[in-house]
Amino acid sequence: MTNAVERVVLTHLQIPLKEPFRISGGEVAVKDAILVTVETGHAIGLGESSPMSAGFGYSDDTPEGCWEDLCERIVPRLLGQTFTTTEEIAALAESWEGSRFAVAGAETACWDLVAQGRHETIAEMLGAEQSFVNTQVESGLAAGLYPTIVELLKTIEAHLSAGYRRVKIKIAPGLDVELVRAVRQHFGDDLPLMVDANGAYTRADIDVFRELDNYDLLMFEQPMAAADLDGLAALQDAVATPVCLDETADSLERTAEALRKGAGRVVNIKIQRVGGFGPALALHNLCYSEGVACWVGTMPELGVGQAQGIHLATLGNCRYPTDIEPSSRWFVDDYVVPLIELTAPGRLSVPTRPGLGYLVDPVKVRRYQVRQREFTTAVN
Ligand SMILES: [Mg+2]
Image 1 (cartoon, rainbow, N blue to C red):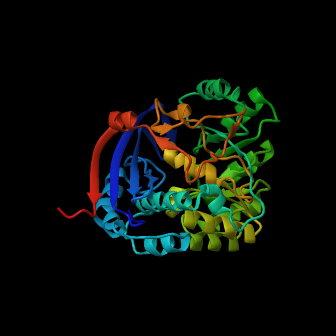
Image 2 (image 1 turned 120 degrees about the vertical axis):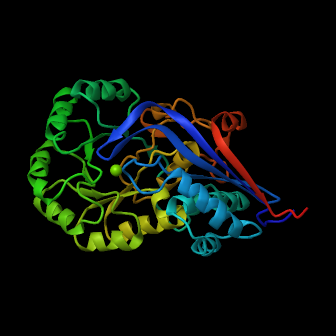
Image 3 (image 1 turned 180 degrees about the horizontal axis):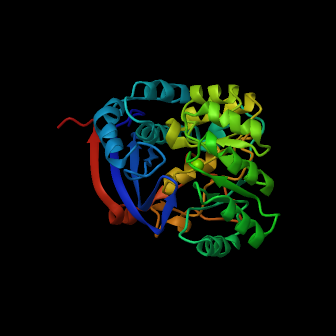
């Protein structure tokens, strides 16, 4: 029995969504994720690589690409390795070639292993040097684009009784001010509300945001394309509502440049997009040192990925509700035990068992798997 990685199992899962999720850049009806199980002689670490299916607008990462990266370029370099600190995990992850979503799957499993070995939760490991750690994590409701405003209002209404701490609606050119006005009229001015454009606007649309500026929104999430830092800065200059960097915040370097340019005042951190807990923590700490609030977004991931976000959101500079929602919000089922659930109105509990604090349900993993591959160090 050693601390070296002896076995890695990759399982590609597909779980149908309850309703299609539509944003300005595409639509998806099935959630893909790759469960990454990393085993030593002592423990099993869980990770998830959670790209959306091809053609959906968040990023270029796909389940097929991540599967190949993990099989060909990451797992062969993980087998046989020993690591007991997050610095050692970071050094190892540096050596992996592959998309950040693929790296995140393996990196997060390694964090789970190290946390279990130290008898700490991942939240504790993330916050070890911070004296300010949130003890509860807030859940925000996200609603996609709907064919009619009535359907949007009905969806929000149906979920609001769960006590979500804020509502985020997707907008797209031509589907913006009217939506926000309707939500404000229906649910009142006290509802914490924000919009997410997924990069669908340009500098020519600044007047749309001048109008939206009158609706007391928490933030405008990614109004313009990820790389249009000057456009985002021009917009932030023109409005009082904070601009939130989401797709832009795909690396420490670009986020730092965006903040220097005044392209936003809030940052949405996604573990998948930056390549795991280590880079996500670095992004959080950059925001803190720049005096910029951040919060934890999702793809959304399946259970293991969402649980990772709960741990990250305990960090003190995460000052807005997360996008982490219960398993039952989007998916017909989930493969984690327990399911991700609100344990108080609008609130998620931080697991207290060492590591991630969640298990997988082997029956459900079998039920939803599309393919599985096992790698071992054993020589026969
Ligand atoms: Mg977003």
